[in-house]
Image (cartoon, rainbow, N blue to C red; front, side, top):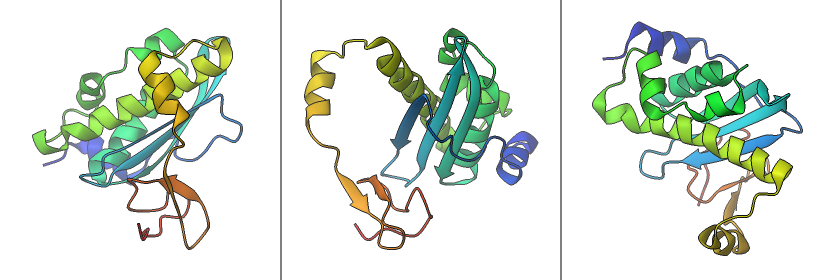
Length: 166
C-alpha cells in the first residue's frame, strides 16, 4: 500500500520539531480525518535555512511532512513555493488515492509558513476577505493536560498529543 520512501519517512521523520522564534509558521488541519500540521521556517538570505514540522496524523501525513520539510530546506523562497501536493507525493513515490489529501496539507502548511514570513517581513496587504477573516479571533481549544491552545478542528493537542475534549 505504501512505498518504501513513505515507510522510511514515517519511521524516521526528518526535521521534526519546533523552531523557537520562527520567521514563519503555517498551521493546517483536516477536520474530517483529524490530521494536523504545523510548519516552522527560519529564513536567511532569502533561503529556508531551517524547516521543522510538528504533525499529528496518519502514516501518510507524517511522511509527507517529513518529505516536504526535506524538499524545502535550503531552497530559496521562490523554489519552496513551487512545492505542490503532486511534487510531494511524487517524491514519496506516490501515495494511495485516499491519502492524497495529506500531500495537499503538507504543501499548504509550508505555503502558509512562507506567507506568514512574507507578511511579517514585507507587510504585504491582505485581501479584503483575509482582513475580514483575520479580524475574527481564531477559535481555539485549550488542552486540559498542558494548557496549550489548539485549533478548534484539532482532535489531539499539537503540543503534547493528548486527545482534546472539544
